[in-house]
Image (cartoon, rainbow, N blue to C red; front, side):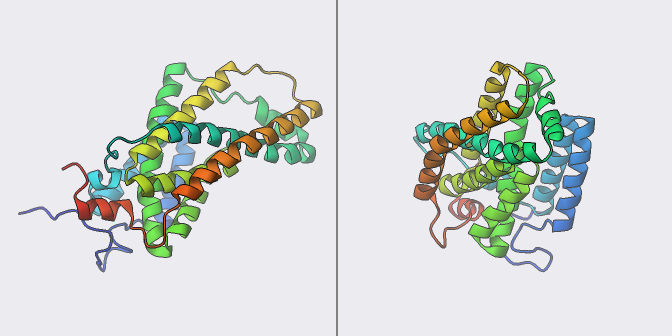
Length: 272
C-alpha cells in the first residue's frame, strides 16, 4: 500500500488542528512536566523525553523532517549571526542582573544560595554534548519547528512567536533573555526557512556561556557584589540591546509571510 505523502500545514483534516500540527496543549504540558521531573534524575533522560515527544508529533502527523528543518541558504553570511550571538549574550546577562538585584533585597539568603549553586558540575565533554549539541538540536525542533509553527496557524505569526518564546523562557534560568532569544530564533527560522541557522545561533550562544563560566572566579556574594553586578549588567544591556533589536527590526517578517514548513513543502526545498 502506498504511503501517504507529507502534509502541508494548510491542509484541513477533521483529526488535525490547524494543519498537520496536532499536538494538544495538555499533552505538551504533560510532557514538559515529565521532562522537568526527569531532569532531576539526569539531563540525558530529560532530553530523551523531549526527543520522544518530537518524534511522536512528527510521526503521528506524517510531517516531512526535511521540510521542517530546511536547507541552508546558498552563500549564507554568518557574520551577522556571530554579532547577534554576542549581542544576545550581553543582553541576557544584563537581564539576569535586573532580576537578581531586586530579588536580593527581598530575600538575600535565597539569591545567595542560588548564585552559589554550581551549575556546571559535569565533565567538560558531557557539558559540551548537552549544551552545544543536544539542547540546540532538540529545543529548536520543538519550540521553533513544532510549537511556533502550530501556534502561528492558530493565532498568527506574532502571537506564535510570543507564546512559544514564553514557553521556552519558562524552562530557563534567565526568562527575559530566553524570551528575547526565542523571538530571535523564530525570526531567523522564518527568514532563512531552515532550523539549521537557529540551531547554529543556539549552539554558539551556549558555547560562549560555557567558556565564560569556566573563566569566572567565585567570590563573596554580598550587597556590594550584587550592586557591582547590576552596574555591569546595565552596561551589557546598553551594548547588547541595540544589536539585537536592530537586527530583529531589519529581519522581522512582513504580514502574510508563510511558515517555513509550508514554503519548503510547496517549493520542494528540502531533502528527500
